[in-house]
Every structure is written in C-alpha cells, then in structure tokens.
Image 1 (cartoon, rainbow, N blue to C red):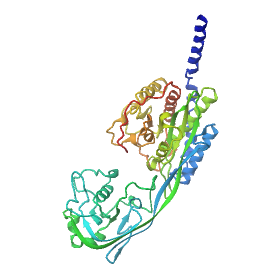
Image 2: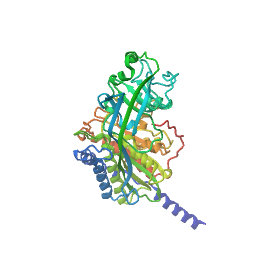
Image 3: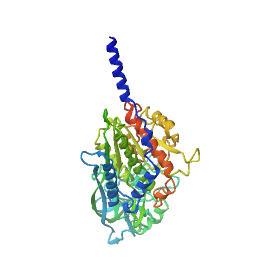
Image 4: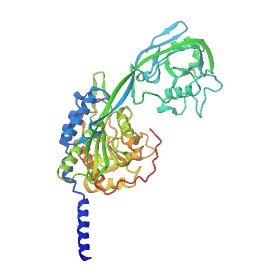
Length: 503
C-alpha cells in the first residue's frame, strides 16, 4: 500500500506539473510599440488604399496578413486555406425614369433614386394618393381612411414638427415611410422633399450579403416640387404647408428603374495555432482589417480603425507562436481572425459565425480588438494615458470579468473603463464591432476599444497620430487575458442568459 501511495503521489505531482501555466511575461515583452508601428505603417499605407471591402486594397491587406501568419508558422484556419471567402453584392444603377402625363423629368435634378432601395421595374399608374407625411404608427396615421392598395402614394418628406424619431428600419424617416406604404399595400412611393439627402444617392449602392430579400418594399423616389406640381396642381401649396388632406389624384405616372447587381467577394483571414491537451477548444482573437477605402482620390487610412487592432492581432500571434516554439504553447488552440466587411455591417464576422471553421460550442471566448491606438478626448476621468474601454465582459459569463480584471491587476495595471456596458449607451458601442456576432451565438466576448476621437472615419486617421506606448500596453493586456483563457482548466461558463435586442 505504501508503494502504491508513493507512485500515486508521483503521478499526481506529474499531472500538476503538466498543468502549471508558464509565465507569459517573457512572451508579452515581444509585443512592442516599435513592431506595432512597423506593421501599421504598412497596413494603413497609401498602397492599401483604405482597405475597403471587396476592393484591391482589401485584397492587398489580406495577402499581407496571410503572409505574416504563414511566416509565423501558423496553420491555415480554413482547411488548407488561410482565407475564408464570402460573397458580397452591390447594386449599380443603369437608368431611372419618371414621367407624369407627357412630361418627362430629369434624374438627379427633378427626382432622385436610391439604387439600394429600389428594384428593377417599370410601373405605370393612373392614380396617385396623397397621404400627408406618410406616417403610420401609434402616434399618427396618415393612411386612415385611404385606399392605397396597388397605387402610387405621394407623401411629404421629413417629419411634422414635434414628432418623435421614426421607429422604422434604421431609425430613418425614409425607411419609416417605405415601411408604412408597404404595410398598406402601396405599389410605389413618391417623397416630396425640396432638398433630399444627396449622400443617399449614387450610381452604386451599399454592399450587402444576401442577394435575395426577405421583404420586397415598394419602389420609392424623392421628387421635387416641379414633379409634385404636375400631380397635385393647385393643391401643392396646401400640401407643402402640412395642412393637406388625403386625396386621390388622377395622373398617368410612369416610374422606371433599371439596375444590375454586381457579384463581388471578400474574405476573412484565419491563422491557427494548435493547442495541446485541450486543442479541440478554441480561443478567438479578432480584429477587422477593412476600412472605408477611397472617396475619389482621397484615402481613408484607418490607422486606428482598425489598423491598430489588426496589427495587434499580428503581434499577439507572433508572441504565442514564440511561446509554442519554446515549448510553452497554449493548451487550447487559438484562432487569429482578421475580419473584413466590418464597416459595411459586420459582414465578415457574420459570415464566420454562420459558417464557422471551428465549432462555436467549442469556442470559449472571442477577444475582439477594435481601435486601441488613440485617446478619447471626451474621457474626463482618470489617467487618459493608462486606460482602455472594456466592453461586454459581464454579458454572457460570470467567469470572464474577474479573469480580465485579475490579469490587469497582476500585469498591466490599467484603468478598465466599463462606460459602454451601460445598456442605455446612446452610441450602442456593444453592437458595433465583430465580437457581436460571436455574442449573439452565445460565445462570451470582450471588446477592447479606445473611444471616439476627432479623426474617426476621416482621412486624417493616420499612423502618425497613434500613441504606440498605450497601444503596446493595451495589446499586452489582451495577450495576458488570452494566455489565461488558453491555459485554464475549464472553458468559460455560459451562465448569463443572452439578451439580444438586435442591431
């Protein structure tokens, strides 16, 4: 018995030794401001043209990231491929027409068409129904008593004085009017607005992921008073005053839209570091590498947004690769995920979350880095040179926030600011980066963020404005947290119910 106990104690000691987590500090020190800067001056350079999704600049950035993963010895994260491709669609307007009787009107002068908000059709109607502001909600119903089924509706743009913000899609008056017209069966909508939002129009529309629409909304044109005069005649002045009543007008109106759908593609870049005894469980470290591209010849460099996160992922990948080469690799596997399409609507992370290359129920956490290179000028408390916004650590797992805080207390000693965890946050920051698509699938997340600064989404977001010292410290915090996530005995509990009102 004594001999048996001796051997059991030896085995137990061996297992304990095997599970002892190595010191991460020597590898964290390889994450330096100088290396981050070197990468960022390439990723946010003129050559990459602002890295807009589905453009040559984005493809150059993807190739750079893939090459770095390959040189670090990471495995491809999508079978034999480092890139996970997904389709992107974009509408291109070929022509649009509007006639009233025998009078033809000029596009982009007399009427305006959003290519994304209209489908290919030629509509010919003889009745037009005026429906006030075209609002139909709990506060006001401009459609009351009107039969608009199958008819063209003419409504005023904007909102009546004192009206609440529209509750329709995207909180937009345009979409609220389109929603209301669709719900009452209208065939098309003419929106009278003397100065329509020109940014809403263009030869090409916004990119989107799904070619087939769940709901087809009525074609909708903005029109000027010149067009409205041809339909309403002497009633135009009363209508513009907001005092006009619902009424049907006899007018032969033709509305025509012809567009083509461009079939594009983009990609996420995936580098995989295989773990040891827990290699079937995954830690994801993510950032988006796309930005806004170019407007004519003006480049939006996106150094902070999110070049800073992208190059931090590269540096973390290098640190973990060096740890593995030294025989101190992680127990869990780590997926380094560089997403595209974030600026278009979280496209890349949405596609990954719906087509994961590693099971999401085996994914313990996503640590998402989006903008960690600048200082928030609106943050008036604490040390502005030693903080980071930590978002979402308390949303899905009671394990996560204590682990995050413990690693910060032990290693980086930064001020962890939870401002954007407030459920009433008007910016809704929690819903605005790629971690959200993991969270909505139940995967615990942390989103690391520096705040909104004056160069956000402007051409002036350039590498020379980055604070590389604080960026180094923030990146190391993510590394230390990831190190524990990859080496602790248990996956994170998922013990907080998902509360997802949607984006």
